[in-house]
Structures are given as structure tokens and as C-alpha cells.
Amino acid sequence: MDVAKKFSLILFGATGDLAHRKLFPSLFRLWSSGHIGDFMLLATGRSQPDREAFVRYLRENVDEASTQPGRWAEFEAFIEYFRLDAKNEQSFHEMSEALKGHERSRQLSGNRMFYLSVSPNLFGTITENLAASGMLERQNAERQAWSRLVVEKPFGHDLASARDLDKHLSQFVDEEQVYRIDHYLGKETVQNLTAFRFANGMIEPLWNSHHIASVQITVSETLGVGERADYYDSAGALRDMMQNHMMQLLALTAMEPPLSLAPNDIRNEKVRVIRSIRIPRTPEEVAECTVVGQYGAGEIAGKPVVGYRDEDGVDPNSITPTYIGTRLHLDTWRWTGVPFYLRHGKRLPARMSEIMVRFRTPPMHLFHASNCDPSYPNVLRIRIQPDEGIRLSVGAKRPGPGVNIEGVDLEFTYAEAFGTSLPEAYERLLLDALKGDPTLFIRQDEVEASWVWADAVLNGLAALPKPSFPNYAAGSNGPSDAGRIFLPLSSPRASEPRDTWGSFVGHGRRVHEADSH
Ligand code: BG6
Image 1 (spheres, rainbow, N blue to C red):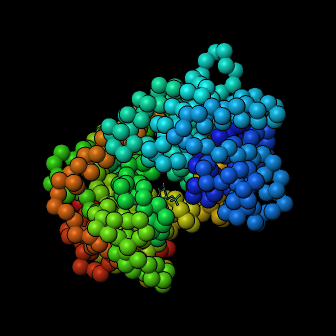
Image 2 (image 1 turned 90 degrees about the vertical axis):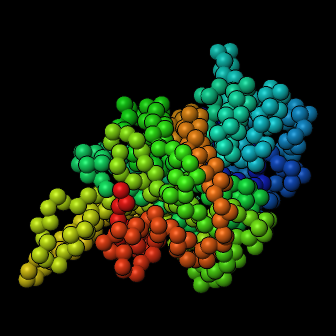
Image 3 (image 1 turned 30 degrees about the horizontal axis):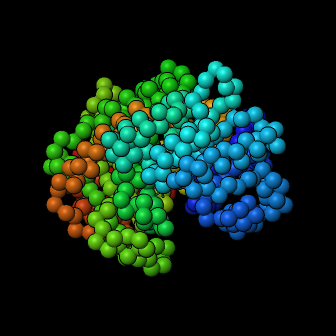
């Protein structure tokens, strides 16, 4: 069993949404399953006055505290709390004394993981104060214990700010000490992309422009902006999901075989993919391959929901996109000529993330005379969530007279194959960071490469006429303009009624999308 050795986890933003929804439950499960044992969790925050109040707050807000009260009570013994004013250096000096005191009394060895789950505008101040108070140190030969810094996304707002942030951090720590989180990499189904591609002899020979016609990556959410309007309204769909999570999905789908599974061998290949994205040069080029949208009022699962502009904390005239769809090209030997469609939106009809790979049709339509649709492609769907699994649609002869070919599915689901529920992404990421394995964390050059592309798209969009938002109802399939990219009029099936999301949501339905190159 993987066990992380003695450590202190110092959590900034301990009363935030991520902490009670993901971080505390994940740590609790890591502890329950024996992956961590000898540790202290020093929570910091301002809103709770002391440890007692903080522990009470956790009991009220973390699900596991009410579903497993006995175990949770034992887990509480590992928790300490420090009321911190993150902008005040003196407060950090006091915290440093408290930290040392706890480490002494708990006989911990000084291994420290600082987790920044706070608003990005505090990253700089916190690291500076951590270093000034001596809590966070560069790794050196004299210091036996390790110090690591885990940074939540977003890492920068654009290329310039991502570089500034990195420069700032590098004054206090080395790149090897920085763990930039992208929680999609902690998902089992995302890690399986590499296994699926490189552990199976039959996949890789087909994984190129000779055999693949298009790749479509979708992250569709039913959720709205929730309580995060403050952050989201200045970020929008591209910065929130596409520059990071979806870039990682793209990189893992398209990368060359790595030399080994060593962290830098994988990250070297991922960054090459991101660097190979063709950068749109003019606003017109951006407009040609990008569709943005913002949800208006509508219904999700039969319940009315407000439009984005009426969400708490959102500017009533906001032009922040909650939907983005884009077509991009990778200028590499393997992928030239294959369009990659990426799309993401909030308040869409289904929660569904998947990578859909559409293969080329056979060179000759042997079954032309039958009822078979000669344009019917083999389609591979790698379902990231929910209903995690992989499905390959193939043509099969319908039993009976004549030769009628129909689409059928070959399918694997995690539920059937492994019979266990999948671990929360943060469990894996926390454990890896504690063990010092950076494979599933983003390197700075990956961050910068994806900002180069994202900045070009954002600048292009900013130079175009102001969009007329809202342009899709909550619960609908997104802006109708998306059909311009995802369903070209040249499609042989364009006359059929269909939508841009429904065509690939749902079991065993045929894929109508056509390529546009
Ligand atoms: C976060 C985004 O990084 O990922 C959210 O900030 C989004 O806006 C979330 O809802 C999606 O994560 P998941 O794991 O639910 O797909």
C-alpha cells in the first residue's frame, strides 16, 4: 500500500468550498484506508475563531462527518487550527511558532505541504509571508525534511500573469517543490487514457490522421456558476475549463508515446502537443473556429433556474461566456488534417465529459447496395464521467435476409469490470503530492503553452463585436451557432433534425457529426 510518511499539511482556505467538498473528504478517506497515518492537518482561516469552532464547522459541512460520525471523531484528532490574517506578516510569524509547537508535540519530522486553496490574488502574499516567517524553505542538503507548495488553479489569468506568478514563486521555492493542481489529472478515467493508448497493441497503430477523421472533447455541465460568481465572472468558460482541464485531456489524447512513465517524460510529450496547436492570428480566424455563449433563464431537470446575469454576484450586463466551443488543429506529423473539437458549457442538459474519436470510413463501400449508411463511422467514446467507461461503435450485419449493416456497441464500464466506485480525484492528487510524485501535476511550461493559445483566442474574441448574450436557455443544447462548427452544412445528414449535444448523449445512438476539413 502507498503510504505517505510523517508530514504536516498546512491548508490555506480551510473554510472554503473546495475544502469542505473535496479536500477534507479526500483526506478522511486516505486516512480511513490507511494511506496516511502519522500527520497533522493545520487548517488556517479567518472566519472561525478557534479550533473548537472550526471542528464544529467541519461537522456541519463535511458529509463524512455525519455519515461516519465515529470515524470522523477519531479523524478530528489530527486537526489543528490557526486563525490567520493572510495579509499580515506578523500573523505568519505567530503561525510559524504554532506550527513548530504542534510538530514537536506530535513528533513530526518537519515535512510540510502548504496547500493554497485560496483566491489566486492571495498566492503571492501567502508565499512571500511563508518564506519571510521561515516556514517555507527552498530544498537544501542541510534540511532533511521536505517542503512542498500545492497551488490550485487558475495559475494566472493570462500568459503574462502566469509568468509573473511563476517568477514570484521561484524567489522562494524551486520548480520541483511546486505542485500545480489540475484535478482532471486525478480522475481514474483520465489516467486511463495513457493506459488505453499504450497498453494495447491494437490502438496505437490506428491513432493518427490516416485512420482518425476527428476528435471531439466535451465537458458538459448542468451546474451554473453557483456561489463563485466573484471568480467566474472575470474568468469565463475558456479560462475556467478549457485553458486547463480540457487542454490536459487534449494533450493526453494526442501526445506521442512517452519514453517512460517518469514524470518529465510524460510532461515533455504533453507540452509538445499544446505547443503544436495552430494559433489563430486574427479576430476573423478566431470567429471562424470559435463559438461562445451565455445561459439565460431555463430549466434543469424540470426545475426553473435563473439566467447567468441574474445569478448572485454577477454583473447584470456581463458578457462573460459560460459556453465555449472551438475547433483547433495540431500541426504535427501525426495529426495534421484532423480537426479537434473542444466544447464546454454550464447549464447544459446533461453532465457528461467524454472524448469521442471518429475513425475514417472504409476506403470502399462494399455494402453500398444494402441499407447501410456508407458514411457510418466507427466511433470510440471514452467516457470521463459519469457512467465511466469506453464504448466502440462498429457496424454489424442485422440477422435475416439480405445484408443490412447496423451500428452496435462494444462496451466496457468501470462499474461492471471493476465493481468498485472510483476514488475522488483529490485523493490521488493529495497522496501523490505527499509522496513527492509530480506526474499528475502541471509543469510551468505546460501552463504557459496553453496560455499562448488561450490568449490568442481571448484577444480575438475581445476584438470582435460584442456578443448578444444570453444566447442559450439553461437546459438547452447551447448556442445554436455552435452548429456552425460542430455540424457543418456539408454534412450528408444535415437535413435531419438534431442538436449539437444530443447527438452524442445517450446510449448507443449513432453519431451524425461530419468532419469539416
Ligand atoms: C473546476 C471549475 O475546475 O472544475 C468548475 O472551476 C467546474 O467551474 C469543475 O464546475 C468541474 O469539475 P468536475 O470534476 O465536476 O468535472
